[in-house]
Image (tube, rainbow, N blue to C red; front, side, top):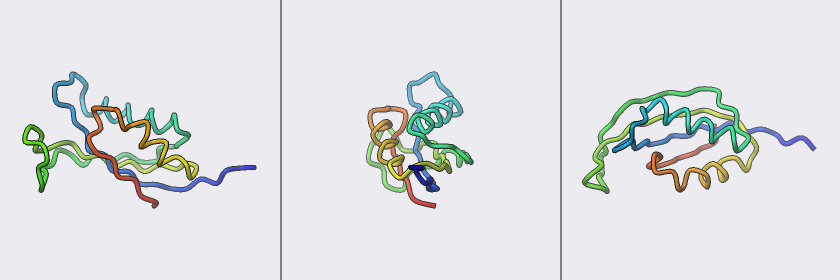
Length: 98
């Protein structure tokens, strides 16, 4: 049986405080994780550094936002969230169907 692919748009907030990696390297790391969970990246948009409207951590008042469009099976978003859950470079993840 062939699994149908769905299109998704994911927004990530990346935290590179205290890390030597650049934002581009963090984005490449996220793209690798998407490939590990059988996703195919179609577009990447680096939105840039933005201030938070509501600050939850006084040490982190702004971060880099990235939007990635990808396709994959229906289980891909749950697997992606689970893989990125312990990644300290990814502060927040929001995935929606496109």
